[in-house]
Length: 349
Image (cartoon, rainbow, N blue to C red; front, side, top):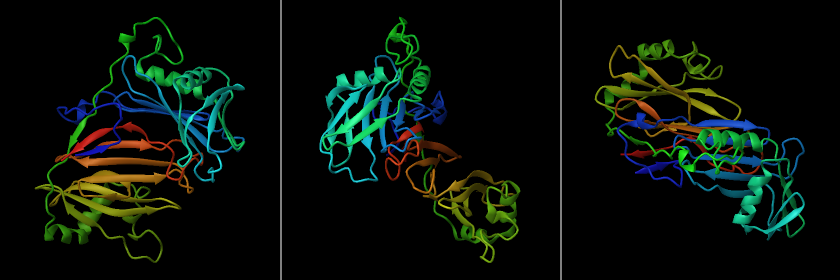
């Protein structure tokens, strides 16, 4: 069993089909804070240094599972691009008041909050505040409060906490038991692998198949399906790859486009004989393992933020099994600071 982007506080339960996921995840960004809530009702909110003052990179991640009486968990990451090894101890200061040392891992540049620090942090995010991290070497990092209240309000609304004692923004007297429960992680079962046949591989050279793909795909989405068949002038046409998915379905792939720092491959499910009736999965993938297709793209060339999507073949069709980002592009860490999914599943053989 492979576990994809599952919320750490929840256990996946086998459900009668992928459609059992009752809600869709959401994203929301305002100023220096961003939110991602997934299909189990777990929400993650990340705040960063202000985008307009060039402060040293830093980020806080707040995580809260869905359901009544769920605590907020918080963690912090200092910018990983610069050498912070001179900082061996880190303290939290809010509005000029010291809240003492944090649990700081100097080697990793990460920290966690005590219960007292977390309570003060959550209160500070509901109003104008100055949130600072102070190193024993005199280094300082400032987490912006701009956008935090809007993001926390959105989190409360998604989780159904508005008007309850556990709300972060709009507390009230509604019973905590009125908060909707967390939802189980949906299970996606992959179809059984099937060996590709020589005739399948030979189909890659079929002009009729290539024409069928072009008929259902915009040339803007897949340049290689244009008249030249190539991605750059003077290059050879991009070749199709054909792999078998089931007794009567094939997976066709093709390099579709190249950008400054991303590439995209197209994937289609077709009948194994004419009429091929191709069904497009994506034109932005970066690879496959036949039964799984993956997208992973940089938000910008620096590689400090990424977006990823995964599909799995359930024996009948490709369904999304994961959708996630790493948060805002703020130079906190190469590859992104956090994992912020909007779709989580358990993928099983």
